[in-house]
Amino acid sequence: MARTRISVLVVAIGISVLAFLLVVAAWQNDRTITSDEGTATAEVLSAGRLRSAVSFITPDGVTHNPQLGVLYPTNLIAGQRIDVEYNKADPDLVRVSGRDASVAIIPAASVIVVTWLIAGPAQLILRRREQAHR
Image (cartoon, rainbow, N blue to C red):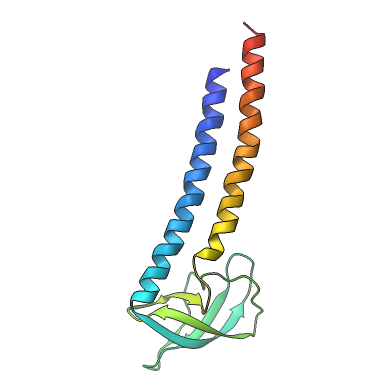
């Protein structure tokens, strides 16, 4: 039983760390974009909850269609024209204009809270079972 409790704890800590790192990575992407920022109008080619594809033309006339899509893609619609901000040195690093890492905080925090709302009671139940078997 002690191994199970430790496993639950390790999984909960792992999920929490990953959610935190997601926010840190989003913040780092924002810093990279802001450090050498370009702006353009992009067309949304496909829109999904987690990934949306866009296409935009930089001032040098090159069309970019970032393989990983656009950062912070919520509420986009295919065919829509949106303003984007991108890193001039790496135009594949692009975000919807006006959005930043702060939009990742609530989902990440929600994942952490739900994880611990499950792991906490699970720990208590496992501890009680362990004590009952003694």
